[in-house]
Amino acid sequence: MLGSPVSVEVERQFVPVPSGVVHCAMAGEGAPVVLLHQTPRSWDEYRDVLGLLARSRRAIAMDTPGYGDSTPLSASEDSVERWAEVVVSLLDALEIERAALVGHHTGSYVAAEVAVAWPDRVSAVVLSSMAIAPAQERLQHSRGPAVVDEVEPAADGAHVLELWRLRAPMYPPGTELLERYLIDCLKAGPRAAEGHRVVARYASEERVGEIRCPALLLGATDDPHAYPALGRLQEAIPHARTVEIEGGMVPLPDQLPAEFAHAVGSFLDDVDA
Image 1 (cartoon, rainbow, N blue to C red):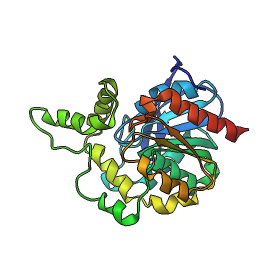
Image 2 (image 1 turned 90 degrees about the horizontal axis):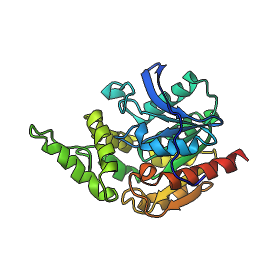
Image 3 (image 1 turned 180 degrees about the horizontal axis):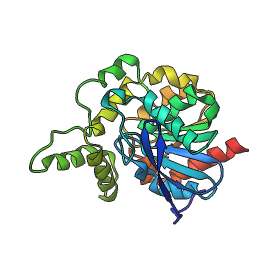
Image 4 (image 1 turned 135 degrees about the horizontal axis):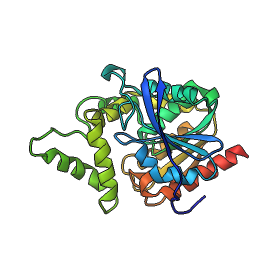
C-alpha cells in the first residue's frame, strides 16, 4: 500500500440527506471506507490519502456538517452525536450497508460514536490522534476560548496572520499545508473554533470503551495534543491494534499520506481476511 499519491478520478457529489446536503469526494471500487476529517478542515485533508486507498477500496471523504461544502446544522444542534447521525444518513443515501470508518482528531470522535451507536453499520474503525481525558478536564475545554482557531476578526486582516501563527508550531516547515488549513478555517467561520468545544462536550471517555468492532489506533509521535493521551486510549479499547507514525504532527493525513494510507490499508486488509 505504501507509495506516492497517485492520480485517480475523483467524483464529487452533493448528496441529499435529512439535514440538508453532504458534500463528499469518492474514488475507487470495492469495500467502502469513509474518511472523517478534523475541524476546521474538509475532505481536502484526505486529498492524497483518497487516491492511495482507492487502489483497492471505495474511498469516500465527506465534509462534516458546517465544514467544507456540507450544509450546516443549526448552531444548537452541533454535537458529535448529530454529526454521527449525518454519517449514517450518508451511508443510507449511498446505499452502503456497512463501511469502515477512519477519523482523524475530531473525525475520530465521530467515527467512534457511529461505531458505538450503529455497530451493525461499521465493519472496522480507525481512530487517528484521538485524545480522551477525564470528564472534569474535558468540560473545562468546553467553555471559553479555544486554544487555536479562535481569533477576533480585524478590519486589516491581522486575524488571518494570527490564525496562521497559532497553527504553525503544530505543522512541519513550509506553507502548503498551512495554506490548505487556512482556506478551510476561514470558510468555516465561527465553527472553526466551535468544533473544539463540540468535541469537549462529548463524553468520549465513556463511549470509546463500548467499541466492539476491529479497531486501529494511530498515534502521531509529534502531535503534542493527542500523542500523550494514546496510552489512555489503549487502556479504554484493549482489543485495538496500535500503530505509531514517527514524525507525524497535527495534520497527519495530509502531512504523511503514504504512511497514513499504508497503516489504514494494511489494517483493513487484515480485517477483510
